[in-house]
Image (cartoon, rainbow, N blue to C red; front, side):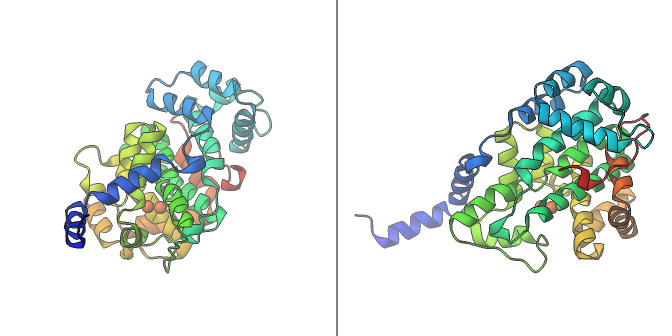
Length: 312
Ligand SMILES: [Fe+2]
Ligand SMILES: [Fe+2]
């Protein structure tokens, strides 16, 4: 029989390791989160392919009528001049651009996965989705400013899924009758997660992203979206996602950017200050259609507004 002191000693040795086993176990066995819709998995393969050929996007969309209907609905909302005239996937690809259609298809495919009530966090169904979509719009806009328009769609996709770790942790919290209710639903939520669970949603999200086969750059952005200064190379995408997350919280909860002093210090040499974040938050609140258009338009296309509500 193992004495109590030996068990205590072993636990002290395992202190840093044990939570990681628990985390891996819960991410890999999280009920209906264990698998993504088949079409989303195919879209992810295309997202990893820099060439992003139109015929490949069309083949994937043609195999999913519901997805195609959503993309066409978005395509028609997107063009004032062409409203109601985009009837086929091919037309959408020509008018919007391959990568923009792929990004919208990915967003539409993630709706059933992400639009849910997070019981363990006390976050209503639409609030988590709105936070994710707002972060995506702000991340795309910031990426355009930091790196030009070429990677705005990538930042939009990364912003959209930046908090997916909360989906995995929520199932765990709910199954164990636990609830995290921060003063602001998402502010400093990582701290509360670590206190209660020993790990946070960024770690869970990175594992889930790898498990789901997300492009490596997206997994890195998810893992480090609260601390882009920890990423040794190519912090542009991670920085855009961090700003997206902050701006989404400012827009929803009326927080000031000064609530994130480390982030402001990191952003200053990159030409972004608190007022830039305020302007972005205002644009998302006051003109969401323009914010979405700016974040997802393909360079050189005549992209027009659509509304977050039209992604449903
Ligand atoms: Fe987060
Ligand atoms: Fe977030």
